[in-house]
Figure 1 (cartoon, one colour):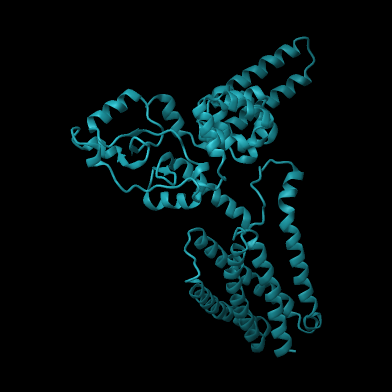
Figure 2: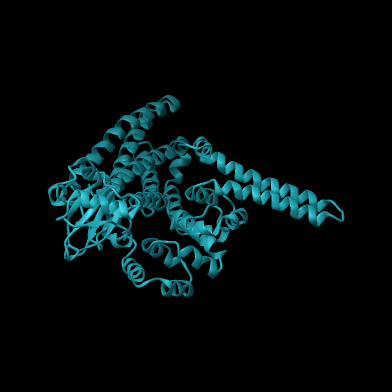
Length: 480
């Protein structure tokens, strides 16, 4: 390992980001000082200092991996982001564009002219081009397609013909194929002539003369077996394979389940047309997780943390409007019991506890159900059992923690009846939270929506309104 590699290993990503930010701040400070000075050589000094800082910053960027540069760009405000982006060497633009998030990529592409976009795209593989093409200007995509050879053009069109959540949109076309009637020695000689293998190559794909997949030859089997053996004697005849119109997230789950590095993609006739690799699957799982978290919070899309105020508002206000309506409903529920609250002020102090615990319990249930649905662990056959289990959990939690807060209410206000009402209200609201925690995501799924979409907002609204109504209603009946 070289000195440079050791240095890269020792420095954390946060350290590198801090160094870039420090260089940017230093540049601004020096430029500000030179602006304040009045001298004949002011412009010359300013240009010299500016150039020195940019050279040092560019040298720092050259030492970083493309993924690290992408991380730094995402963590910088727009002005600094574009400054750093202009310092990145043109031959790395494509790799970095593929690494950054969609929202940040949009700002970077907007800062590039057509010539720069074409230069960056020409260095990409067909599957990478298909991933980037929807975000490029139409004239750039048209010119780029014209510049590709026939095979590359067909591959890009093939990838673009599938939806983004289908296997075909993620498959890679760079793979090594061999025949089953040759020896391992012949395969080894063939690989040596290639000099370089496609990334994430852990197996070779065995096909017949028509390109139909017959099996796979893992690299480890190729290396440890007698070179005189035939491929047909060593290969695996039943590999995990996928169809291009299959669900990409189900493929990602299969990669996780079977510890796959790569896997063939075949058409309806069994002909090999591409492969899936672990890097695409990891990216997909990460994106799905991020989307789920955003949806539960009521955010419509991934948001650049340094996006404009208007864009952030548009992303957030839909579910805030829904939340406002539900909060108003909760306030009207409280308004129905104004007389009761005036007679027993303790109710005003205790009712937020019932609503708050119910909301927390409901969010726990929803999180578990959404996760189970994402892993395909929920079906019509086990829905009723799942519902009963969650209701029992809610009942036990309600009795235990309701009893605790009931005792606290008795000690504070000296009323056993108030403690019993508190316990009953807590139990009923946790049962309501468990019920809705199961029903909300399942209903959204049956309506064809993401089960996590706004689920947190909806469960909080239900448990708040329901908790207030249950507690104040019981208090009115049994205490007043």
